[in-house]
Length: 194
Image 1 (cartoon, rainbow, N blue to C red):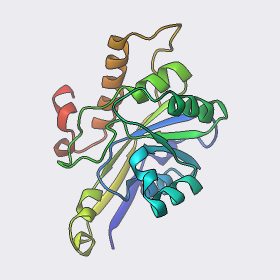
Image 2: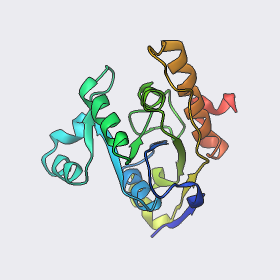
Image 3: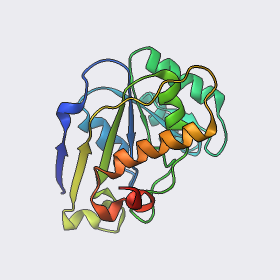
């Protein structure tokens, strides 16, 4: 159906706490990412998805948990820290939604806050080609779907209160890492920074 390839699989640690950050183009991104990383992952997903009975049920069975976008969701943040403290891999789409343009949009600061406070390694992942599957009969054109996995990095760890400016800078680091793994046409808001 599609031509699918994964690059950089050697960058994925097999065990230990890990924050995976990725762009988000299509509905198939979460299962595609989960299968590509070759290790169990837990997703944070927008709370609206959990209100749809079959989707919400499936997400919970797969270990995903909801987050309220646009405000500080303390319960979701506590759960994210717990997931990481238990040595799991947590997946966050920093933009908080699928990109309608195909390019990276402005990201929320939540992923940076989690990485800074938890002190865990960050694994950037860039997905391209899945937006073609959103179009009617897009799969018939056999689009090339690529999952490009970058190198691990750490953000400066927080010793006390994290300032908004520090989170903005850390968010920029995360999104620039993702953008650097994407073809130029997909870099969107972060294309000018690379």
